[in-house]
Image 1: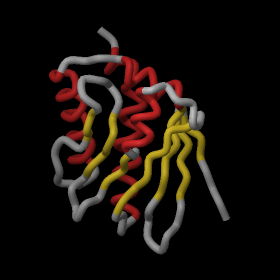
Image 2: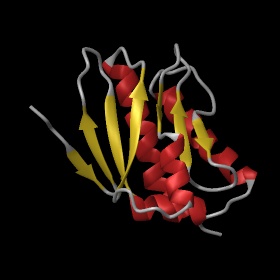
Image 3: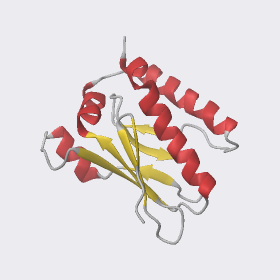
Length: 140
């Protein structure tokens, strides 16, 4: 059985490979908007601080989970550090966005090394926080 949940600009797609791995599809227009929105390092730092607070609330001991693409609002990887646990998009997807190639209307993020439902939930919460705060994050 394949389930998905549409939330805002994302589609959550659990794919069960014997563990808790999952995928997220992000709206291409939203992704391009995040790429084109340039922000100072201080604002990226503030987003990581918000994420750090969320991680603490969720009982995960890790700092600065967001990896941004250069000086943009686009996050390439969400990392919680526990044995290589992350959610990321691939280099080809980033290159296609930069070249404005229309390979798909959706940008795919895949998880890696997710062993527990809690790890999956934490990554989903971080992804959702980014989408939720995107407008405030990129505004002047």
